[in-house]
Length: 452
Image (cartoon, rainbow, N blue to C red; front, side, top):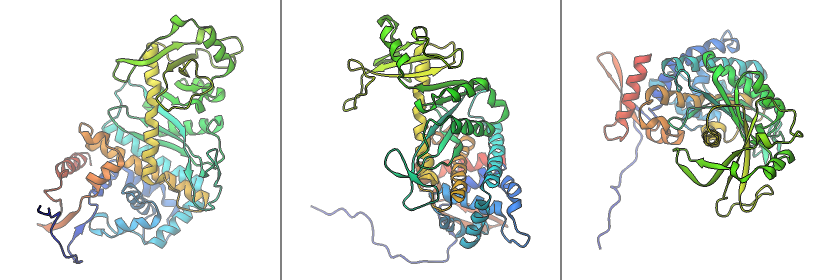
């Protein structure tokens, strides 16, 4: 039997060729220019620039965001961008960037407000070029909290309800739907012992999220959340804003009483996301059977239940009845069928993907010690995630790359190496013909150049 040679043996040496590793980051840099993000960062962060400073704080933050988008998880990873000045210009040294983060972290409220103002203006410009929603579509904002671990005694890190240690930020994302990805809108960094059902925190995060949306989109928002969002004060706040909601509710005694008195005929067939009947799942509206003890909630609130057979191996809960798992959610939406409302609420599961992708883009671990600095880092991680989503929206809106997750974007588009060629007084980034996604990258550059 012949041995199959996997590849020829090569000798490795360093040279002075003008090779650019991760040259696909130029796509993100071009998106930053097309959205006005680079210019806006320089303007908003001008108060943190010292009179004798050589490096613009906005440019330094943008370089740091690019390194996070490429997979960096600490300040020193900006060296990936610094090593390629032909493409990204002069990048500040590690001590300079560290001092900048120290300065921003010394006044985190003002610094976060400045970065959020930049994000909002860039988002409005991006959506002006290519909106992820049609003019009259509902804009879905998902709220959820998630744990971020800490492996050292960082400021305000504490034990959490899962017996871990770290932080418990509350976050909000805008969902582009099944044909797109999503964007982080707001993230409130909180201590690990913070609860998921804090009405005050959810109200604050929702208000921050709405401020991130273009003004024309704010009146048609649907706020979606799990049972942690089913808190009276929070639901009243949504209602007072004139918005729709679809939030999970706990199986309190009045709801259990309604389930016990509701006739079997009230249960209707559930649907899957393709509009086909979902086997082993039923939905019903409990509103008319709720007792008078179910009080204090906003008028027009509807309570809808779903029951289904738990998947094999699932741990049964106290509210499960005769082998059926029953979950409830509340909404103020009128019109669609119960099955459609249930599918819409169940699509909230996409929020888990948004959280996972944000953690994969700098938020898995907060690398700094001071709480204020970690607030800045979490804001920059959101900006890096948005930059990837905006690139997909502007450059690949009608292509399969529109729904790729950040890890795949990095592997296929950002990680490609290129060579800087100077000819006829022009500098050209030449990509390898054999790279499977070179044509896709070139298409993205052409579309972004047409906007810029």
